[in-house]
Image 1 (cartoon, rainbow, N blue to C red):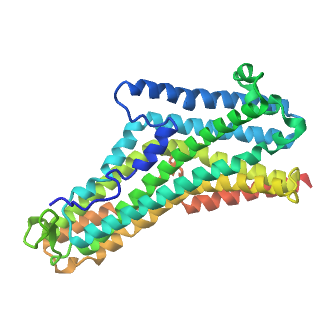
Image 2: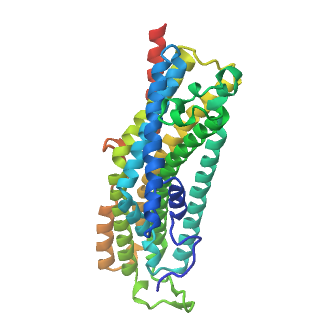
Amino acid sequence: MVDKLLLPDSHYVAFSLKCLTFCGLWNPYSDYRKWLYNTYTIVVILLMPLTRINGYIMAARSLHHNFLQQTLMLFMVSVFIVGFLKHMNLLWHRSDIKFIAAVLTWERSTVSSTGVALYRNKVVTKTMKITRSITVIWLWLVILDLPLFYRDNLQEDHRSIDDLPISFTPLRKLLEHVDFFVVLAIDYLTLVMFCWSVISNDCLFLTLMLHIETQLKILNFRLETGTTADQPIINFETSEKNTSAPHSVPNQQLIICIRHYQNIFRMMRVMKRVYASILLPQLLSSITLLTVVGIHVFVTKTVNLNDPTSSIVVILTLSSAMIQLGIYCLGGNSIIVESNLTSVAAYHCQWYIEDAGFKTNLIIFLSMVKEPLSIRAAGVFEVSFVTLKSVLAKSYSAMAVLQRAAV
């Protein structure tokens, strides 16, 4: 029978998609509102980033005498370009995301023992709470952190539209006669909106990866406990135990596990198609940012760490790059670790007392799970903590080389 236990949401990634909807990246409408939302998407996801990119490039040209501010502008250009590419990638692969979100709930339609059903609801609920908390906390941190980048504009001699990146965009003609603080608020809000869209996109990736890891946990738990002959099958409509049902046979439960792994494999294949190409620009952007910040702090010493405000900006900039890169590596590494445990879980089932058919199916299954599941950036760099360590090492090496060259 189908498991009727209720979960907080019928859709595991519903919260992430709601955040994307607010940011203009996910159109949930099919009626006349669809076209209104498409207009919203064009303004927020296309026009706003492109005008900001143009503004930051022109600002970088005008700041050739100020190396620190120029590199900050160039950093913002890279951030907006990578974010823009992520948005286009998500819009292009919308159907793939919908496929993954649908397949994630496939296991709930299978017959399972009481223990498996309760474990499933426990780990899925926990994952939903974790991903929701990470998303909310990260979005709030943006609101609190970004005002530091406007600290100079609060000084008397910098209260001019010429000191804001928005002055280099087509909006200047519309805003040049508006009060400075109104223009400052518009500049700040558009930057927050873009950062929110990038964060929501990254959190969707983390949510999908952690839910795939959760599916692997459920699979491993079912392999260890659900393929035992004495496990009762529950009909959640009548609350009656049935140990003679066809699916209570261990071999049938193993077949369900094989189908479950096939669905997980399909989700991973789609994840690679969606994210493999966009991960490389993210890695390169993170390496560049870490290196540039290190140059300013340790080589050119254009950033004075004795200044509390400058120190906070440096810390926040590094934290932003590390969190963004860590999000990808955390999701990829969690799947690698859990998929490595699948063959161990299969070995721990009571295969030695089962018939030849069960053992044959188990051998086939073990051949399927021999290699761990993973995602590679452009098919080269595996997204894991090993990659994160490599990025940090390469950034440090680049800083060391430049520091020796400066001496």
